[in-house]
Image (cartoon, rainbow, N blue to C red):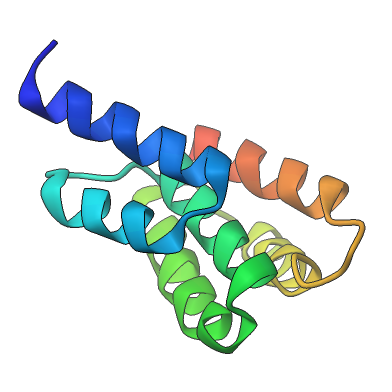
Length: 106
């Protein structure tokens, strides 16, 4: 496994454990974090550090708009609404919507 592969594995373990410090450390070492992984980080912030969530959510949405060439106005609005809903206890549906957009935004 390459150094980047080990760092990515450490990143995923830290996300699974909810360890924001370790996640951020791994992000600094990874050359590029894809939209789906970045979304997992934003979701973690929504749950663990809500005071940092809004800025991260805006940055994620900005990336979605840059990377999803076919993003429509309605999809952009849906993404913003879903990001806001990540703060709610039942965030499964908003997270599914955002995962779909991230996957198709390559």
